[in-house]
Image (cartoon, rainbow, N blue to C red; front, top):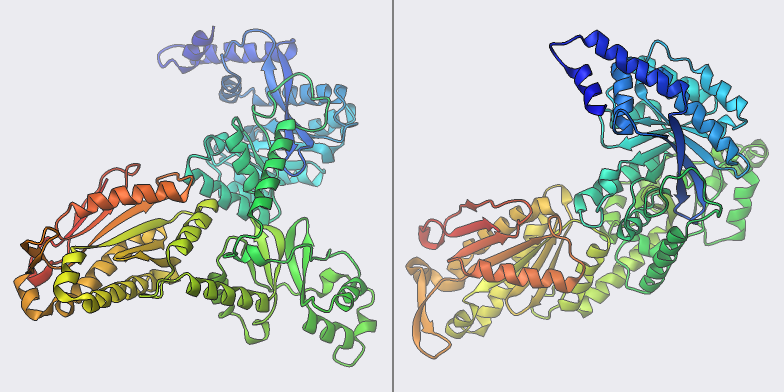
Length: 636
């Protein structure tokens, strides 16, 4: 039956009109009979594991002549019977939801709506109102899910239809976000209440950094404009842990509950609750660690509602003399700030001394400042300090708002930021290498572990001097120490020269080994800068005579005379962008492996692990004494 219907519609040499009529008749028969039913899939709150909503899903009672449900709707669109099918499914969903007590349990009901229905000439918005009233489910509890997979041709008609439903009190959700045609255009046009991330991006998100970062970016952007997020298609505990950590509001998937003709009797998910406990324990275990990001030092539980009277804010500042700033927060999002000195001076005294009297009946939202600095919690202390330099003089010492994935988290005073940076600098000094002054092993480990925990994309450059022992033996330890110090300075300079003030970190493992951390897009450029700067110093390291010869004669490890090449560098690059590391030890192990490969190359070499990107080779630069092919840059 399925193959016959598809063939009838898609055949190119037969009677298409007759085939289409057969399909239309089949769809009308399914709607007028008892061929379609409704299953409900729960949607849980990520915060407390409570049951937040159910999504109504159309299913067939007997064998589906179209094979899959999506094929039924696709054929309905092709034969212009989509309105009939869509309205029938809506009424079924509202009726069954009412019988299952959705209203009494104060749950939201998510209904799927095809965008093609909203732009169809037969679209009649009043039918949904009729169904809502008939089955006594408040419009405010109905969420219309509009899939993003469809291509919309008439955006004005589509927007007008969505606006109608929003004005009637319905809530709007974009379904399958990221999988279709509309994307950000649909998001900006209809300004939904909810966005459901397509299951493609949730599946194996714990193993794919690009999925993690895309979902993180969309979640942060949506939260900043007041849109709540739903992750659908969660099927593994690892996926649940990641999406909860990203701050996504609501959760849906087979791991939590499969679609059913009933609604769970208990009001919470044990799996989600277990996930909440796990994350709480993880956060507790991390407390007391040395801070490195702005979120580590933020002061929580400091905010005020925009709807409260002006006098409430005055009282807060009077009661807490240490409070310099007061974020104005609405639905977990910062919409303004009250800065102590300016707020009290302007609104209590006023220009003529009547400020208190004139503002007595105003709300906080009327008096708040809308210009303030807000940063994500995972930004480093140093990056935030750089942001302060671009502030206006009168705002230089205003408190900083901290968000996590767009949601308000806390506040940081500039004095606390400066104290933290000072303490961090002292800690670095204590753990620094005495020869170069760069952070040593322990600090390097902490820095890498911190960024791994943040799921941050970065590359690790493991830099090693070739033939350094015979150099030390021949030229002396003083010159050897000079080379080490110079290489440390070269690495630091290369990081400072990263375009647009990009992030970077330089550490000295010990001896002639160095570590550089930088963003993946900058790592190759940083490596080339280090190589070229080091090559320019070779005449100083070896003297003009040995440099011109391109070698020198010294004892090897066996005590025998041997001809050695001039100093060169082997740089191994490992990227967290294409590798998923669970620990510092795992990353260090791969870096050592790549370094061995780099040291097998003759002369200067840069080897980057690109096993997931495919091989790529580059060669360039000039070797010492004008020789060519002095630099090998390869990929694994």
